Amino acid sequence: MSRFQWHPKNLLLKRRMQLVQQHVDDQDLDLMFSDARRYPLLDADQERAIDGKKWSAVEALRALFAESAPLAAYTSQFFNETLSNPPEIKRFANREQHFVLRRELVDYLADGKHAAEARRCADKLGQLKRQSSRINLLAELQMPASLTVGMAVSMLRRSGGQAADSVADAIAGWERQWQPPLSGFMLEPEESKTLRRQIRLYTEARDQLVMHNLRLVYSIAARYKGRGIPYPDLIQEGTLGLIRAAEKYEASKGFRFSTYCFNWITQAVRRYVGDVGAMVRFPTHVQEQLGTVLRERAALIAKHGIEPDEETLAEKTGLPASRVSELLQLSNFHISLDAPRFEDEGETLVDALEDHDEGATEDRAEQESLNRFLASALDKLENNERRVLVSRWGLHDGPALSRAEIADVMGISREWVRQLERTALQKLEKEPAVQAVYADYLDDASGY
Image (tube, rainbow, N blue to C red; front, side):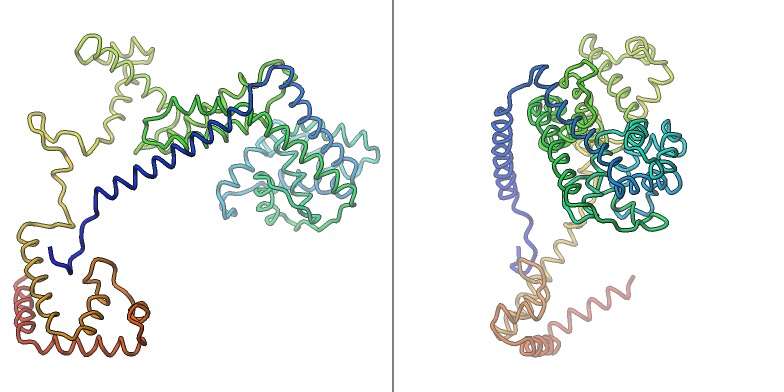
């Protein structure tokens, strides 16, 4: 291969880099596992105590919403905008923020189950004189903890404070759409201090529930390994589901947190696998049905050694035969390039694809001949001229360089690089051999 031709990727080096990355990932996983083992599983009393701290902080925030005039005015406008100016996805720069906010506000939109309570809060919260009446009005809303804390963080930010919260980030994007625009307000120092303290207590309690149950995330995520998705990504999605479960959990209802969060973690991981793990994205319920049918088919083939018909699969899965037929057709929408091209041959589908990088045999021979000719022509130039042309036109093992980059490498000015390039091209243009090759190229081009 000519020195002026691009070399193929070094597959051995690539494999070594993959092994190094895998080793780094394994080390990270070991650190994660060892860190999770520092947090033992909680018993029922501990879960109730921690969850009690979380909801006490939430109730304290709601009481502050009712007690503080600026916070009550903000809450009133918040729910008025929810009903009259709900968030629209096209007005969000970050689409994920829209989905987060819609999830929190779904019960308070015009067609939500708490729309009437939201309307009363928007109309009367700022008019009620007694604090107890305002607290009762807010209690009727049954706001989730995540929304309450998100509103509190948003209010804290507007008064100059700082706190991290994804719901508050989404609210900030929505506030810019409010009509009329939200007027600024300033909290009393004691009110800001109370907000920060209750937000911190809530976050600590929620994170405590999360950290003591991370091992459950690792266990559930491990069930979905081998589906084309890295294990750390599965852990990340499962952890997001665990955090969501910790926000919504209520120990007063009598069940354990580990029982409650199991479905949240599983749902988060399964949705991620469905979204990312397949070439064709199907709805979750379709993926589940398809997986059931394929598992039953594989089990029957292993047991009887023959392909089961649709009626047999329908009987085993409890689905209608027509539905089984549709699901089996969906499984044929994509096929691996490693699949055999013919039943009686070892050639695969990828072998039938045209290699645009290599081209046909005659094209490669012609390219190699041109490379040799170009190398001999460049050898007739001065050393600096040859070096500039090789670097400028990408004839070496690397990308083409700009004149500024060549000047930095050679330690000369860009103008001198330009003059060397021009002189070298003029010399090549006067070469009889180069003129003959160019004439052959024109003849071939005119033949088409």
